Length: 472
Image (cartoon, rainbow, N blue to C red; front, side, top):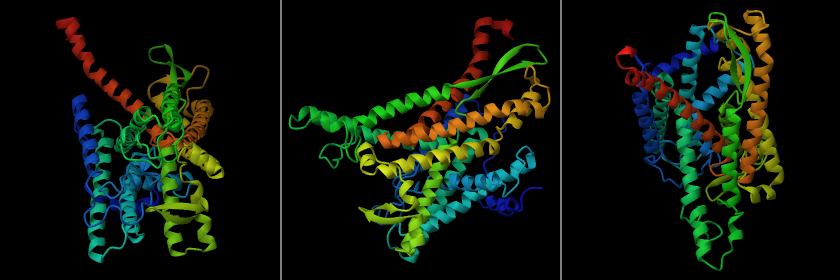
C-alpha cells in the first residue's frame, strides 16, 4: 500500500494546473522550440524585479549558492529551483531512510510519488516565500507589501514548477531544472569574463577587461591577474577549463557488461556509466547546504547568542550579505577562490569534506529512487530478452551479478564528483565548481539527446534520398 504521507500531500498538487503529455511525439523541431521558449521565459523572469521592494534592501540569504539554485536576487526568479529541489530532497531522504515505503516499480505508486513530488514543490514554494519575507530578505515591509511580494513569489514559483513539468513530460529536451542551471551558469561565466565593473583591486572585475587594462597601464603588473581577492583571476580561468575537460572525460567513461540476445543469438556489451548518478548528487547537496544556511539564519536572527543556535550557525551581516562565523553553516558556504581559502583553510577543508560526504550519500540513495538499481536494470535486460553469459537468466541472479558494478560506480562517482566540485571552488572556478560541473555534464547530456533525436528524424530522409522508391 502507498505511504499515508504520500496520500496526504499528493492532493496539494491539484491546486496548480498540470501539463499533459504530448499525444504524439513533438519531433525535433517541436522539442527544440519548446526548449527555447522555456529558457527565454526563465531568463525574462530572472530580469523582472519584484514589485514593492527595493532590490538592495534587506539581506541576500543565498548569495553564495545562487548558481546552483538558478536564482536571481530581487526578481521573479528569486526562489529559482530551490523549492523543486528541496521538495525532492525531503522525499528522497524519507524514502532512503525507509520512513516511507514506495514501490517505484508499481505504476500506481510511482504516479502517486510524482504527484507528491509536485505537491512538495508547491509546499516549499509557499514556505520559502513566507520565510523570505519574515526573515527580512527584503527589509521592513508593510502588511500590504508583504502580501503583494508573497503573491508574486508564489505565482513565479508555480510558473517555474510548470516549466519544469512541461520539459519533463516530453515537450522539450533535458529537464527544466537543468536548463535553468545552464542559463544561470552561462550568465555568471559571461560576467566573470567581460564585466567592466571595478573590483576591490581597482581593476575591472571581468578577467578579459582586466587583462587589457593591465597590458595598457604600465604601472600595473600582470602578476596581479594570477590571483585576485573576490574577483575572477587566471587561476580560476585555468581551473574552469580544467574542470570542464575532467568532467567531459569522466562522463565518457563506462563499465561494459557482456550480454547476449536470446532472440538473435549475438553478443555485445551493455554500458554502465562511471558517473552513474550524473549531476544529481551535486544539485541535492547544494539544496541541503542552502537549507542549512536558510534555517540557521532564521534561528540565529531569533536567538542570537544562544549556544544551541550557534551550533547550527552564527552570522554577521556585511554589505547586505550574511557571513557565517561559526557552527555547521560556516562549513557549507563555498570558498571564494584560492587566496580566500588560504586565509580560511579549515573552513575550505571542512566544506570539501562535507560536500564529498553529501554527494556520496545522495548518489547511493538516488540509484534506488530513480529506478536505476541492479534489480531494475536486470528487469530491463530480461524485458529486452537479454542475458549475461554464465549467469542464470533470472532477475535475482542477474541483479546479484550487476549489483557490485552499479554500487561501485555510484559510490566512486559520488565521492569523485564531490571532490572535484569542492576543489574547483577552492581554486576559484568561475560560476563555482559545482556550477561548472553541473553545466558541463548537463550540456553533454543535452547534446547527446539532441543529436540522437536529430539522427532519428534524419535517417528516414537520407534513406529516401539515397534509395528513392526502393526505400518505401
